Every structure is written in structure tokens, then in C-alpha cells.
Image 1: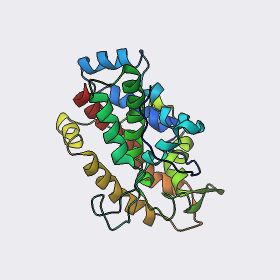
Image 2: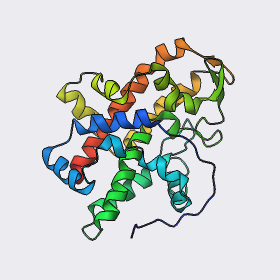
Image 3: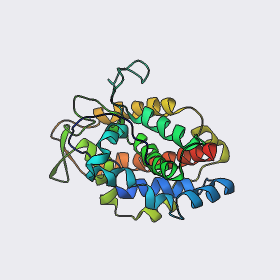
Image 4: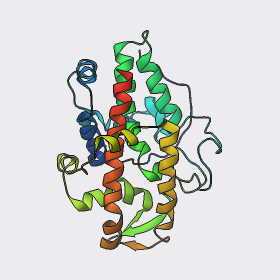
Length: 251
């Protein structure tokens, strides 16, 4: 049986990194896995790739049985506070969700089904962590109520950063992963340092910039992509590199 945390609430679903973004994170992570980790993941995930399973956390949102995991996809903080200083969500958040997944996966008494479930959630949540609007403000639901236009179409800032910039770029997840920036071993090691909270606080600094990057109702077009698409690509790369670190540590 799958172990579920007891948290009851009702909330309208939001999008996270679109499928393309999550699959980029999973694909990049696989290039940084140790052989031992790959073997264990292959067995536990029944030979499915990290890219294939990276969207699982969003797919289950259509099933009410998993509503209790909804708040795990984000963490809200005032722009002038960090995670430790901000008010915690009693229903859980990105940080507590990630740590709970790791706990179940490490528990020798957990069944393989439980480990596989929380592993799929973990893959997804590490990706979510690196989307700046998932570390945004509670009052606008992480940019969902920050209304803008994208090439003359009504949307919101959350969607622009989730998938609209990537969709407009029109590259597959394999192409995006293959064209990630070339980093040295020292640069990769540096990115993998720190805790989940450290990574959240780092992304929150980017969230502050995103909130200043546009005005309500502004029509965002090519100039916005020119300035921020490479930021999106780098966030996906960091997510993949850090996901690999987490998985290598677990296995």
C-alpha cells in the first residue's frame, strides 16, 4: 500500500514545468548518475527513464486520491524572506515533500511500490523546485494571478515561466538536454552543494527578479525570451544536475 500523508484541502490545480521542461531535467540527470544508481533505478522503476516518469507528479493531479500531495509542488514566501524566516504551510510544501520522499526511499522497511511512488514524486519535485514561480508569493498563487500577455494572448507569469517560453522555442526535450551548457567538473560540484533549503533560497532570489521583470497586463514577446530563455534553460540544467546528486546520495 502507498503511504499517504494526511492533509485535506481543496484547491484549483496549477501547472508546473510543462512536460518538456520536466523531461529535460530527467534527461540531464541521467547523464550524471553513477553506474550503481542507474542499476538500482532501472530495477525499481521497471526500466522506465527519468524523462518518462518526470511528469508523474502532474499526471496524478487528475485523481482526487492524490489531492493531499498538491501543496508539495510549491513553497510560498514573501520576497524579502528566506525559507526559515517565512511562515510554514501546515499542509506541506516543496521542502517537506522532498524530504518525505527521501525518507520513504531510504527506509529499509518501505515496500518497493512505496519507494517507486515516492521516487517518481521526487523526480518531479526537484524539477518544480527550480521553476522560480514555484517559490513565489502566496497572494498571487505563485504568479498565476499575475496577469500578462504572451505574444498578444492572455496568460499569466506562472505559465510564461512554466512552458510558454519553451513551447515558443520549439525544441524537443532531447534537443534541449543535448544542448545544455558545457560545465566543468568543478562547476557541477558547486551546483550540487547545499541542502534543499539552500536551493529553495537560491531560486527565491530569481523569483524576486521575475516579479520585477514585467508589469501586470504587459505584452511579453521576443525581447522577454531573448532576456530570459537562457535562464529557463539553466534552471532546467541545474535541476537535472541536482536531481542526479540526490539520487546518487540515496542509492
